[in-house]
Image (cartoon, rainbow, N blue to C red; front, side, top):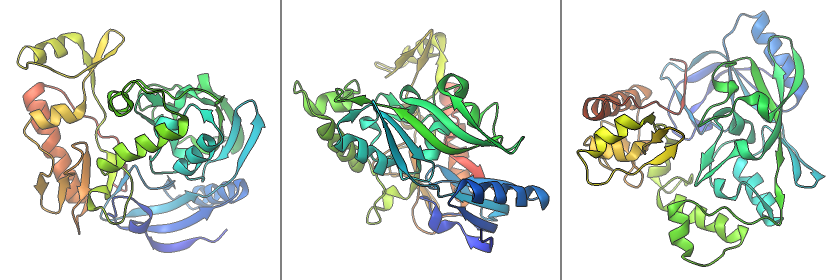
Length: 338
């Protein structure tokens, strides 16, 4: 294990913003990780676990502690659709791997940047699918005991963009690998409006659905592309709020049509719609930070942006939506070093 000092984090994030890590190490094995965590504890250093850097905003001051990037690789198939995947594997690479072998369950999650280890933390979802529906178990290092444990799906507390890993047990578990239970020769999931319209009445294959998702995401600059400045983002910056039905009805009284999705006895309203109707359009800029010209939910680095500028824009949007609709938008990215 080689611990480095003053390592820039900008190249390791999709927003390309932020200061350096005081200390940095790549953990390629469980032993590396255990040793690095022990080092941080013995040295009384704050610890941050980094994956693909696709869902974080690093402060301009950087992180005054130890950053461990998880680089544990490997994909193994146990038969009957069971796959054990290292936390450091590229997520979209894994999706492509299983789709090519005709396993269904995560095809709509194509094109999402980041590593496999981050998917259970956020309960990553898109186009009608969430990883929670296919995760069988998660292998973790328990920082409180120093032991490696396996958490079953029911133990993970999955809900919309949430799990115990980013809520009740935040900072306790570090994901080592994830076991997925996929469906051999299964049918692709077609419940999202954009995908239904894309194929009309045709029944596509898993590969065709993956290609369609990539095409739709690329049109929204939600696929990382060095030639597309709109993709210099952390993905969707705000979660879609789930509100009481009375809140939705009050908003509907002022608008001809309010897009929404039923969420039990509550209603989920697209954050993008709220942002646009609070007066923030695609392409809006504040200094070097802006809203993508292709996707309202993506806050982007227009070139040379600072973390402070992204935070200023975030606060401006949150204030505008709260003032117009009395709804508090919750940011999705993890704030590092603030």
